[in-house]
Length: 174
Image (cartoon, rainbow, N blue to C red):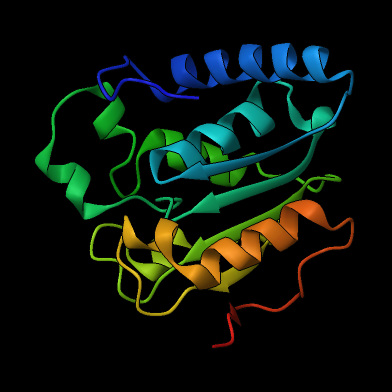
């Protein structure tokens, strides 16, 4: 799914994601889906799953370099959408407070070299979600998406029916 960074808020983008997921499930003849969201997209995935009722349909939700605890880069921007990605924003705090156990397999990919979303922010450490945090060493904010280690891991995650190796954090082997 694509979206404009000029959208009014995360909820608006997440509503579109929910509609597109239901359309995709209908076309595929299934009631389950797996999601991968990069940066803001990971926050959108989380909002759609936690707040908009997508949870029963999601098998795996993977976030990649997503600012779960905000990013200082958002302090440089303007508008409601950007403000929701600032550290301590009401939206991010609400997602943290309202996290709950579910059958969704949460995986958060993060990097120690991401200068846009620092590792502490990108890790999904809410205990109720039971997420697996996976370190992709040496990758930048966009470079993580092209990392052979990330690509191999996410393909494995999405094609196997067993959970990704559990551990907080998990570092991808060379």
